[in-house]
Length: 463
Image (cartoon, one colour):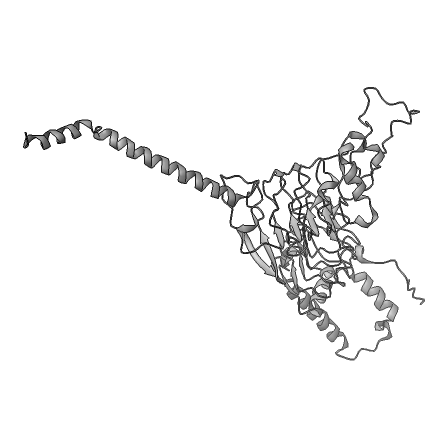
């Protein structure tokens, strides 16, 4: 018994142990529990990175960071963001946050927690239809807020109160519902000191107020029912306001184009199907792009308000004519792109205000090499600092492809040879003498008909 008792004990222990398959299952269960716990922790960390109103399925995209005068700009434009990233996503809290052209639909309270130092916020061209009253809480330094080109129908004054430094607010191209809920915002915008807040925002509904600017609509009308009645209104009924027939005017630059203020003010009017230069161009715009539209003619003073423009792109339009005063006022313009249009020549004086022009693109135009093209060549010779391209003859056919400068040079050389041959033998025939008035008449005859002014003199010979 002494020998066999240890063996019996071992057999009893083996019988009492669970099968190996159950041991493996138990180990797997423990590992699954640990894995689930780690996954939950990772998800929590992921949500923290996405921000309070973020979507945990998307990672924060790589945004561009750059500094200008010690200000930090964070450029997250066009990154398909559906929420506001957290301020901890970058090296330090930014001074300027650019979130244009994303997919943000709602701005919830706390979305800008940690951004207390922001001075400008660009949220244009998103899909924002919900904006909670406390979303901008703490942004006491914010001076510029861009909310244009979204889907906002209403907004309370309460949302603006946390921003005492706000001086520049863009709200246009939103479907504003001009009803009672918009009363406080309308009254705020109409305070005289708020002249740069919501200047171009207009009512989308009701029908009776559609198209009216928020800054001009009577707040007392917001709570009236202005929908058209089922029957035509009685002309003698003063309770229903008569709507004037709208006068078709020039498109407005601010509502027709996209405005970007940072890093430099820029007006993007590309591919907007514009038939004329829009009105009310903001005076602080530095760059303006009007390419790929349907412009046929530049009128006098079209850009007179754009005093700060340094570059103007008018390429890929249908430009056929530029009024002599069409570019007046562009004293600081450095770059002008007129390529791919239908220009034949420039009117005399059209370039006279462009004192600082350094780059001129002229390619893709059917330049006509006759006397009307001489002004452009003479102006370029007097401004050697201007780099230009694309100035080639398109007609007449015998000059097609030739440099316009070469044509003018050969024209002048032929004229000088003719004059030399006439004076070579010292001709003194009085019949060949010409007076100053006759010279003036000869110059006017050389000019194209559309450039000639009214005849001031008429010379009559008495034999």
